[in-house]
Image (cartoon, rainbow, N blue to C red; front, side, top):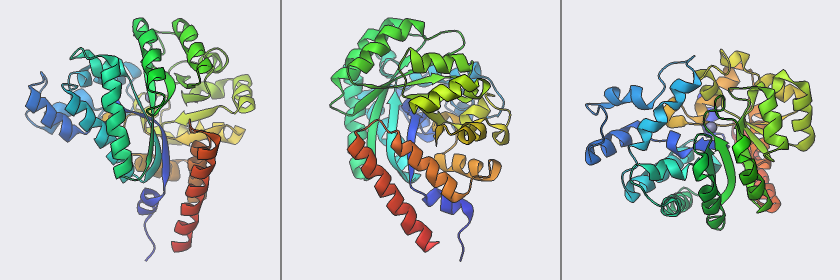
Length: 347
Ligand SMILES: [Zn+2]
């Protein structure tokens, strides 16, 4: 019997380059942890908690989306909880047949409620992520996310990123409110990070303009751009990105929830790919969005008319831009291609 398309897309091996740990928490776990630690939020049932920690509508704005994260910070109540959230985020990725994942997290977010040291938080996340990766036979690397609203912690963040570069931290990311907090204060930090061998990704051109993508590439030294949808507004910036081989971490459901695009069928990703930009599909915040990577692949199939070979190419583009060594990237691409061939033989 021919499998339905969702089953086939769920089975497709995938790569996830843009997933925030803080946005990847299970609602059921939040409820449990909230009750166990007496977190000050509505905990009568999942539906009481849901509107505080999830976006339950399309067409909201970035402020509404970001408003979930201060609530989520209340749940990082112990090392065990942080390890559990990490393990579950990796397990959920494994369930989507993600073979390679870069999980990003903001140590300040995880440390803030209990006043933990950033290095301790990184230790817990790194240990839990590596154990879960082994358990699920997948590869997991980590990216440290610096929040645009927290410039005073930048230096410490760079230090922990470097200290944990032998424990899975491969890159530095800039995230948060792109509209009211420009990237300028972070320039020295990102230049230093890049010089020290960390890879750079930055959220840019998500809620502002193509100019912010240009700035991320030229000044921050970003090798990948988080979202970057607005790049299509300036052909010169598209040309720059293509020339430099910069990849775009596109997150469809997230973009609909914050009105980056009115609907998936209108998402600039078509134009980006047509121009020859490297594009991968990613979740962003699966817990906050109440969505999975398979959901986004289904949307791309249905609303962007991407067939399975096109989606396989998107997975391979992601692998080609993973923040790992050239040899590991080549192996990952070969392994994925192998799996695609086996799957297409069995279809
Ligand atoms: Zn993001």
